[in-house]
Structures are given as C-alpha cells and as structure tokens.
Image (tube, rainbow, N blue to C red; front, side, top):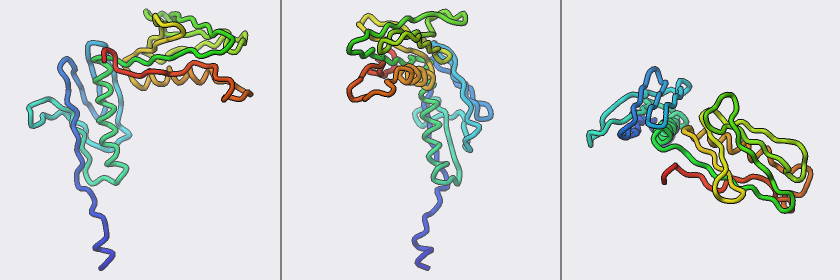
Length: 203
C-alpha cells in the first residue's frame, strides 16, 4: 500500500507551441518540417522523435506549430521542448540568420587566413590558414553548406554566417579544432583561432 502511494503518476499529455512569425511559412509532413523565409529554406526531419507535430492556432489567434506527446516517459517528454527549440532556431535562421565571430590569437608567428570560393559558390565558403606556429602546412577548411566565412574590418578577426545554427556552429568548431596546439603546454602556447561572439544577425 505504501508503494502505491509513492508511485509517480505518468504524465498523460505534454504539449508546447512555437509561434510562427510573419514572413515565415512552415510545412509539416510526416514529422518533416520545412521552414521558408526571406533568407532561404531550411528542412529537418524529426522522424526519430515519437511525437505529434502539427499546425495550430493559440488563444491570441496566432499561427503556431504544436508539438505534442501522449503518455511519454521522462526522456520522451523532454524531447517536446527540444523539437520546439529546433523549429524556433530554423525560423530565426530563415528570418535573420546567425553570426559567429572568431579571433586570431598568436604571440610570435602571425596567423594568415585567406577566404575564397570553392565548388562554384557565390560567397566565400572556404578558409585557408597559414603560418600557424610557424608551420609551413596549409590548413584548408570548407564551411558547412549554406555558411559564409569572411574577414571583418577589425584586425585578426573572421566572421561566419549562415541560416542553420548547427551548420554555423560546426564550421566554427572545425576551424578552432584545426588550430589546436599539439605536444606543447597549452597554458603557455595560447595560439589559435577562438570563438568570441555568437548572435542573431541584426541583434
């Protein structure tokens, strides 16, 4: 009897909504979400998540995307918020876009970077890094699809922009990981390219 009193009641229904802003159209088909806006189109599949994703209207009369889960476990209920966050980021990306800035840090050997266009891209989507710790090897990193890399007006700074927050984040990580100091004391040798700011374009 004591055991019955302390048993947690399973959550019957968990539901969250994401408001669709003006200028954005969202298509949902079999848990595949396509978001279109002034900056382009993003598509993402949520087939691996066991939940309902559908169009709805909230109490204020605003168009929303509703993510709903019935009789879910603790992990399944947590995925409801996760899916909403991903869809929200897609909307922000096609409306404004994401911007990450990175700083070139060096003590003695100046790091040289060159941004160029590869594979017929209209915008710079490849970066070549030279003279890292005085090494002769040329490090070449191609940005993720839809991302642009360029020098800023500030000294020793580059900027990566794109619609997908995941693609921009991966591109930044690849640049930072490529310029890691090996076989030296990283407390002393701080050379590298590090992310300094992350923001939504225009904010």
